[in-house]
Image 1 (cartoon, rainbow, N blue to C red):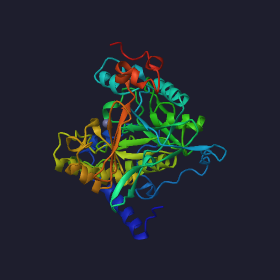
Image 2: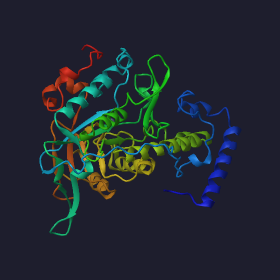
Image 3: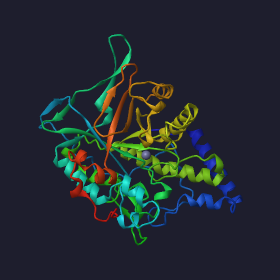
Image 4: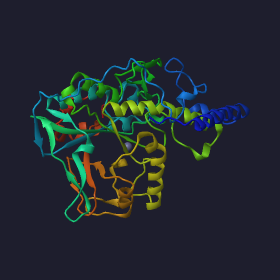
Length: 415
Ligand SMILES: [Zn+2]
């Protein structure tokens, strides 16, 4: 789509040569930093010599021609659709724990993983249960829309969804799909990649340290497979919202700029990471995934100044928005709200985010709360959290999705 013009292409080649020369000249200093970002061993994917020019930013590497055709989208014409105006549930996850024996090995971090995440076996059982209870995945962007009211001003309204009879709508969102540095070696996969078949896979290491490429161990790839096997779990192929920060890049790629490390090596590595992330983003979007901001720095919106919040917003747009495209979705980090409260007030930071195009602002709560704001075209809503904390302490509330006792992974620590 974004074909580079000839002069730009020549400029990119010259820039590459220059960067390579500078990199060779300054070998030794800053080398550790340049290498630290990508400890992926060879064998998982190509290692990191300068890539051919056609994998540079804005020129998308071609997806293999044997890409399978998309599966038939549910619902087909034989399925009767009925209008739905009821509650739209919203459940969110973090990245899932691929190898619980590593996450729950008694070391630092265990308590956080236990509280905030679910294991792969729990995730599989939760999806089975949610599906069995008649839920169907819908796109958060389809639940509300902006319109011009009788006074000639823009407001949001809730849409009537057209669903297969008997189905209940559910939004899924997935926070922090960054494969952060702190998670390395703790039983998580390391990045989403494009496989030889053109589909999304994940690479990482098994508990013995062997590199693996699999679709069995990440929130994204497991849900992809589940919808492939149960197409009526998804309205039109929708999967979920991926809420991204930017401070350690996205999806396992270290795409972030770092003013403290503005070396040629860092810049070259960053360009390569961006070039690798782009086709993954593209394939995710083609297969029912969509994106939200989760702030750049996972900031606490109640503690950071207005200027700080806005600098963070612009940095996200520059470094992450430039990769994932426009979004109207803001998934609050820590569930803290803009201006310290946005349900009944519309503060300066909320207005500024609205100016940037954001319309749907999601926090964390106990029920499928949502409120269309009367004074501005925006919706504030809550999401319920599928994690160890709620499995242990709030199982009743989640009974509508799954039975915590049934899905609970016995590899979790005994508290
Ligand atoms: Zn988060």
